[in-house]
Image (cartoon, rainbow, N blue to C red; front, side, top):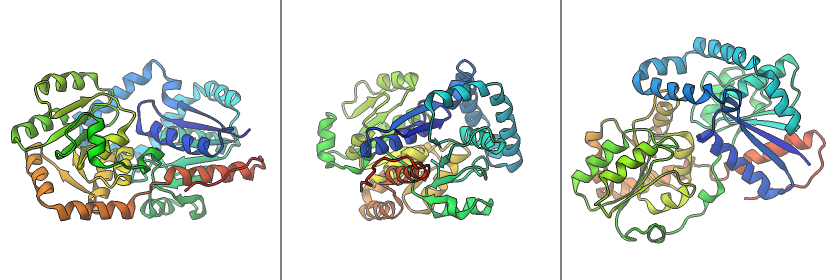
Length: 382
């Protein structure tokens, strides 16, 4: 049966969630497909990887201006690609082992680092497997464009134009949206979702998230909103950040209107329960919110792609940007006072959301498999 290999940088990331969503769409339509997914960076550097990831997060937090320059510079991107290939060259045997073991008919990359490495190996003639790149932010950063990528699946027409300006052939670029799990397509009434979470079904509810790593000024934001004494209840998801989880449990222990949760698999239900989302603008979280027509208040966007995501979401009228936590309470109050604003945000979200992105990307994968004359039946689900 056909085999698809998914590559991303690290586990516990939005890039992995994107890969998982596409895999589920593929397997829903054809359970006999063989799929595998590997954290490229984690696999190559199991000891060094966690240290470098922490360094990456600390750099963004401590010196955001420097990180923003590194992220957007064409020259730095070229140098980083070369350095990445240099380090990866020490582990070419690991890549060879992965390919020998999985024997993929198609390789799908949801992050730029493995995509760049595989494309480089294709250019050298070492790999002759179709390569599909799935961009999971609302910007095509300088690390993505590569003429040895066979197919790009991008969030919208703006990203398509960005790639075309980098001389990527238009015929290789497909506007699909950012892939989210199909569970986000299904919605249940707010009162029902709140009741299932043990909350007051009819109280105004805010969802707060900081991505898989629980990043951002969540603790400060919670303290500020508690002091405002508005008639609100909160769902706070801290991801894998156990330190933040413990602090919040301590701060909120006496408040029955605050539900503190760790990493959650059923984020769809949390979004169903909320009136709007306070979060940093990760590509996957933002796309999930768009599918749910859930207005966003963007808090503490990280430099680089998240700042670009924040600009995109604000420009399209689906999010409000809170630059200072001190202003958060007033922004929240204004949201609830202005029902027309929420309706307008939801209408805008409907216009730019892509609920079936994972299915559309699955279609592109199938096309490449069929092009290799591998026979199996596939029916598109909408």
